[in-house]
Length: 127
Image (cartoon, rainbow, N blue to C red; front, side, top):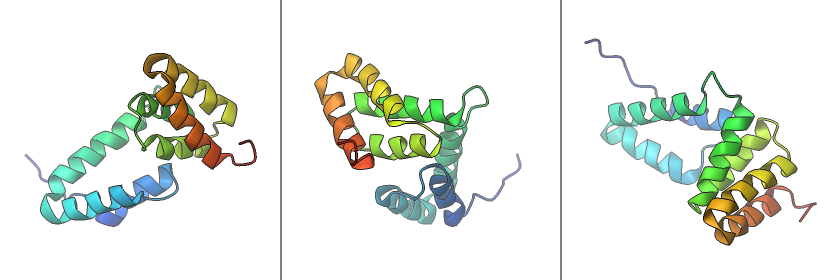
């Protein structure tokens, strides 16, 4: 079995910057710690993450709208990062709001409340 060098911390952070526009602080801390403790584990997780988020069968806007909706159903603050990524991929407020409505169907008002908070911050002129 051939052992390849794990990507550098800067390379991993660039993946987030390319997708979201920045490396979220919580993720930056996890990456830095993990690269000092278990770089092979961090690389494997990050390779899996990027593979799942960049499938050939779906465009980036669709993937990010899906991730946004899924994270809303979990009422996860990470929904904000994927809303930003969806916007970078060309999603509109209307598309994000529609994804939030789908999430609300399965999670209820808590998901829609989180979506309102996220989208109001990203589209303050519409809030």
